[in-house]
Length: 261
Ligand code: NAD
Image (cartoon, rainbow, N blue to C red; front, side, top):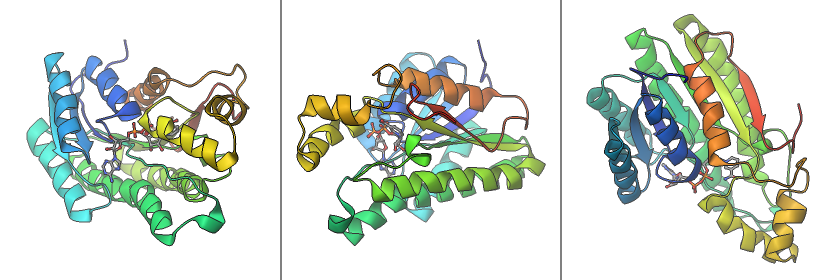
């Protein structure tokens, strides 16, 4: 099995959905985990669950859009778990509306969580990884929407495309320090984030919820299947454990063929 023995991973949005399962897979591979999330009770519960399985895990409450809070959360992780080797910048939100109805406040809120969050967490991780001189791996949670557009998702598609640029810059700047950066681009995964969108899209598009799943979300896949948290976590494990700079600056689409490179 791919090993993360002796590694420390800081995973944002790790109290729910995709991030929570990445934390479980990393812990099973031997990593110590900082469960970094906005929601303190859920972060503590997820960390306690990991500890119950024999892992080292710390709950770190953080709003990824808050500069001081992100710096403090990374410092707390380094102090509490003895370092930082892997960043998974995964926290995210979704807001859907036609462009003409999008409020400026919602546009800014979505970009802040995805882009400011990725910048602030990677900057804090980069500073630590350079100082510690033991390299590292940064993984950003993109989406098929890093490659494709969909209606009703202007800020989300904009942000997810932006993360591909950030990944490539960090791959270049990090190389001299043994720091790799890669982007995971999942198709639709049944998490609270997607469950919330189904009725919203049904309303906005005038479709039944079953048709939103079949005719919108999974329409372009090769087999009509959702991607799973396990599918995404296995890609995250590959990127975290890969031993050299050969695999850097890449994006890997895991989407049942919705998007083909
Ligand atoms: P989720 O709603 O299940 O989990 C998101 C987590 O992020 C929550 O625990 C939430 O508390 C946390 N979070 C939100 N805002 C935060 C903030 N400001 N600071 C810290 N934590 C915050 O969602 P998910 O589906 O697991 O999504 C995780 C990531 O995967 C997101 O970046 C999302 O865009 C991306 N993604 C999801 C899908 C999908 O279909 N579910 C597909 C492609 C990409």
